[in-house]
Each structure stands twice: as structure tokens, then as C-alpha cells.
Amino acid sequence: MNDVPADPTERGETLEGAALDEAVHRVERELGRLFARIRVGWREAATSVHPDLQPLGYQMLAAIVSGHATTAGDLIERLQTDKSAVSRQVGQLAELGLVDSIRDPDDRRARRLVATELATARVTAARAAYEGRLVERLRRWSADDLDRVADLLDELGR
Image (cartoon, rainbow, N blue to C red; front, side, top):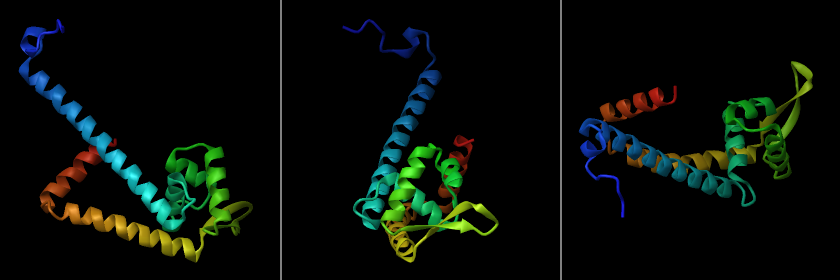
């Protein structure tokens, strides 16, 4: 039997405080569900690019294709992962014919990662499928609601 009173006021909490706590827990649960769905999306996108590609490899490849990361250091910083994971994934991307490593024209000691045409085409198709599903859901909301969600997510991420 639970000795904790069910009524928040009997536990010394205010109704407002209890409602706020429940709202925080709900946001945590919903963010967890959203992150799980995003991970599933990365796994599906990775498989659509190549059956052997891992979700982390897909994230790296997408960053390379978009131009947001062109070196191993950029990938480490962007994805907040360790050097060994980046090295393994870049090696696999090269083996799968999705990335070429070329000498940096500005620093002959450094290497740049460049997506192959095959990678660019497959990542573009994977993104289009994912974005299509996302846009379909988001178009049900008003522009004001979308702006508010974007503002709240921006604030949460700070």
C-alpha cells in the first residue's frame, strides 16, 4: 500500500506546483517519443541509402552532403561524438562508395570529405521522403502555432 497521499495539497504541494510538475513530465515523455521517432527515421533513411549503413553514418553523410561538415573534426563537433566513431563511420562510407576523402587545397596535410553523386542522390531521396511525412503533419497547424513551437524549441535548446 502506498503511504504517499494522492492529493498534492496533503503532501504540502500547491495545486499549481503539482500541475506544473505534471506538465514538465508530459513534455519529457513527449520529447522522448519524438526522439525515438527521429531515431527510427534515421534508421529508415540509413537503410534506404545502403542496407549496411548505420544511423550515425547516415547523419554524418547527410552533414557532408549538405556541406555542414567537410572534415572529421567538423563531424565530431557537429554530432558531438568521438574521433573513433567518426573514423569507423567515415571508413564505412568510403567503402560503400558514398564518400571520397581528398586533400584540402588550402592545407595539403588535411583531408576533406566529399559526398559522391550516388550519396547525394540517395540522401536527397531519403530526405524528401522524411520531409514529406513531416510537412504533411505540420501543415495541419497554423503558421502562428508553428512559429510558437519553433520559438519554444529554440528557447529549450539554449
